[in-house]
Structure formats: C-alpha cells, structure tokens
Image (tube, rainbow, N blue to C red; front, side):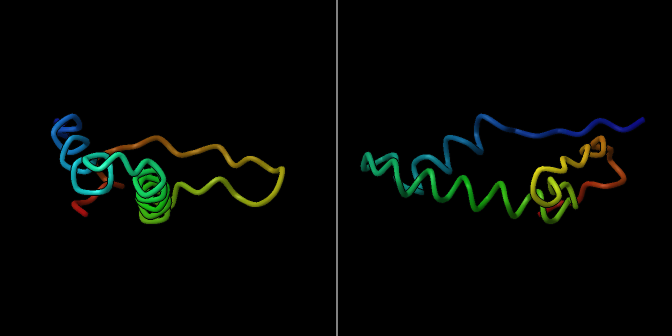
Length: 68
C-alpha cells in the first residue's frame, strides 16, 4: 500500500494569499475555492448527480487520483 503525501496547510496558505485574502477580498477567495472544488470533483468523477438524487461518492484511492 502506498502513502499519499499532501501538504494541505502549505497549499491552503499559498492559495489564500494569492487569491484575495491578502487584500481581504473574501468574495474573490470564495469564488476561487468553489471553482477549484468543482474542478477537483469533476476530474475525480466525484460529482453529486442531478437534482434530489444523491449519488454516493466513491472512496478515494491512489488508483483514481493523479497529480493535477
């Protein structure tokens, strides 16, 4: 079994300073986070489905992840 290394705090701090929080632009940062989350979910094929029908998300494994 392989280990997935992800420097989440460092990445979050870089994104915060680059996309609006340095200048207290919370709307810009919120929009950036929403777009990034949507892009990640689409790439991993982990979308919620349509309407009221909730599709259970598949588990994250090293096989279905890739470097973005």
